Image: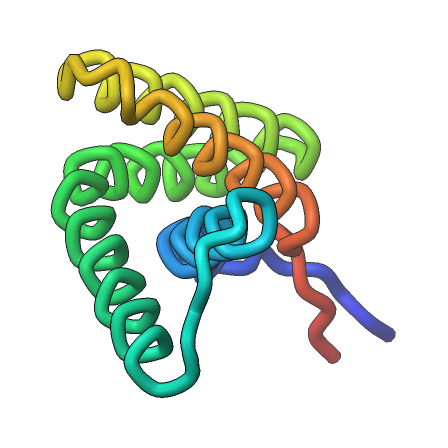
Length: 135
């Protein structure tokens, strides 16, 4: 008989997905939609170094929100809240945190980044599983 348990790695996977996928989407958007060229090795090195910088800054700015989400998530699973509610609350908290973070950065040029982070969070948050089956 299969039984469901809460997936304790959900917040970490959501954080990792958002931190790694969003910069990739932003850089690809620049290449595909704006016609920025990635010329073989030089362009690829620039692309990868920019990607790493995005991840490092994303990690730095997301630490406080990551801690809040971890505490919130484990509080919710301890209270055995439904999966739909957990996802809604966690995704909503992350989105609110993203808007606050980008508001505090106070740079109008960064708002495009915020939308990419929001889209990635929503899609990743919905696709990742809060419950996992065990035997």
